[in-house]
Image 1 (cartoon, helix red, strand yellow):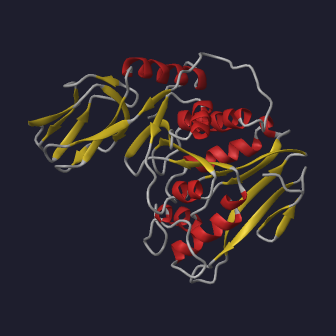
Image 2 (cartoon, rainbow, N blue to C red; image 1 turned 180 degrees about the vertical axis):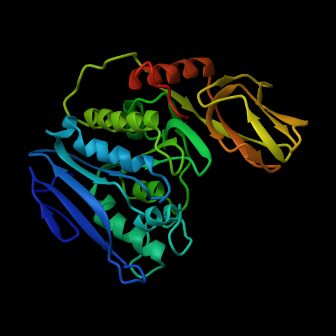
Image 3 (cartoon, rainbow, N blue to C red; image 1 turned 120 degrees about the vertical axis):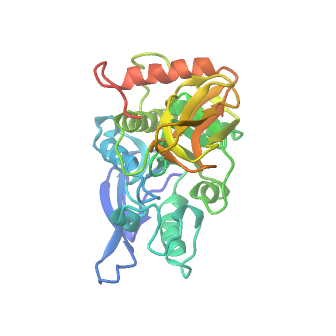
Length: 343
């Protein structure tokens, strides 16, 4: 998509310009004005238009830091095409440290939205029309829920050859072929011809350095792949990519207090003990076992569980032991030796 002039929120951005724009949102009931902050950087040379969005769920904060580091990076000083970076979409949720909007709706189940719909629908419509619809590609940044961590991973329609190549270019080992969810940004974008990746890493209301560095690096890698930035020689260990066609949650067989044994990125065999559950007196009640060989890509962090609660998320690969090795290599590339990732 190449335009001489790009318009967002009534403002024009010409090639070679960088602007910060505020998209006006419905105010708070205190009459406090609200807006979505948007950073637009246009190169002098033509190229793809890419959006990067964070905090569609207001408690998922890693993406805000990823966007901040990205737009301050020297790597994007001379780009081809246009980068539209949105550090906070659900500004209401960020204010309230909540996944949801004030009307208790999930913004990521409200796309493409409508101008006269619910608050969620109106916000989805605003973001979609002003940003997403003007782009060729996009990367949406997410984390796990409260008390749940995700290993850095890309979720996307990997049956689309262009999306698959973008996912591989991002540079994390774990790629999940994920179905589109009704009302999600990914579904609405895909239906409008926008190629999109969803990056999942870390947990809600927490910064995780490993997840943040992997996110910034991944976006820059993707921009290089799309020709928006010059290619560069890769440093550190070479990271392979692995596609998981299936994944599943391991649920607690009993209510109680959890002692986690398996960690994010671990290679587990069928029957491996993932965690034990005890009663309040410390008496053993039961254990969680892996139903198949795979890699731990998500886990509950809080040591409390109810029967039936999802505790571990395991992805199934043809070579899970190799996947786990490359997760460790990625950590080595992104973190100094003395700093271990907080997962």
